[in-house]
Length: 477
Length: 158
Image (cartoon, rainbow over all chains, first blue to last red; front, side, top):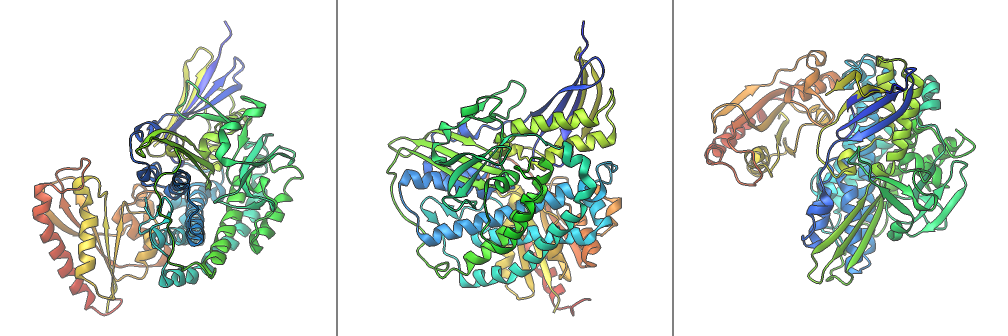
């Protein structure tokens, strides 16, 4: 009988949520398959049924403690569609600032707190030292920058939303309170420091990229489609609204101007028996060929420009990395930094807008439609909220398509690519284990969002023989 | 005048775990002094080190799990080298000692720090306190108010 062996990594550490990885070996001890299992479950889509629609933004924000603002915005946009209202222009701009602040703090968490140990200390570092402490010892200035940048984003969220986590300021029809001049001035005052941090961090990152040639070539470095929302006509970066654009691995546009509210026409979802996370795919190419990526790397690949000066300079440099679309998922880190730059610059533009202190920030209406879709770009990628209500305004059906689920196929394939390259024999070396985890971290997956589940970060890897015997197993709390 | 930071933390939807929030909200009314900053958080995170860097004294208010329900404690928080306490800092959750050590290592900040706790009885879903915490709550806020006022009259940096 042909022997088949497996390695299991359980739990996966320094990511948002619970997961494990199994690596299946052939009879020669080579990795032949890999699976990234998400082992947590929550079921927000089900238990919100029967709730009044206006509760949805606050309820959906509870999906995630890292990106509640993204859920709040997508949910409120779905509710705007139920009301069939156009929200006041100032509310539109304030929601944009709110979303941009969220992206800054989430990207800062991903880069500085979760991935900087890999980047600063190297992929072969002792896991006991490959953490925030290691970064503090090695480069305290970088650690200070991470803390300040995340603080910057969180403070804006707190000023606008009243609190950092699960703010309820974004409501159907707009926002609940206008921006005060004092808060506007305080945020503007903090912009130069945030911009300086963003500029020096992207420079630092570019200076160390050369050390990771092997990782760049093996961390999810394969052709896929890339999807993101862009500003119609100009192809510009946006996190709030626009049309869907899809490019292929050559960088050619394969779909343009798709209506995000018609996502079900072009996005399919497949359930696998071994994971609570659904896998999204591009319907016209089917499953699994319709594999696509979303998030920072995809956004940098689909947009033509950012429309802010410093981010556009960096975007131009980013596009120089590869003549085609930039394929390696290692470059998610780089893309994240370009986006931080954009977010800070764009917030400054919006805060200086002549309408930004206007008091009219909410449109009031009763439900005028029984179905609504809200879409936005969350830090990790395109986010869709889709609700159906009855005549009483109670939720009867809900569907959420989350960024991490859309990256599921690519994450699985990335783990396989890394494992094939770095795992040898029936034992997990520190370097191989670190890299298997690190490639997942490039996507900054939020499993609490993707399964709409609760939990802490952890990793578990198992190495299984062809007969299913556990050959090696590593768990990191 | 010294700068005082009061940090109340916990989950206000988990009954007695909301102690830190309610105490912070009440103290922000009773101690409306320019040198006192009051912060509420679900949990302590590394970013709080930034708030600590300019404080002369800091009070961490939380509900305790161990002890007699309603038992009030106030203990100094001792900063130790971070390498000796890796379990005190995570990206999502830190201990008071961890935040203090981080502030010291990153910014050279050494505020006097106190952990003020009231032992809780019920941490189930809910927004109401147990009888023991409800009874002990005024004592806790009175204690923090008194200590904060004492700290506030000290010269800066002492």
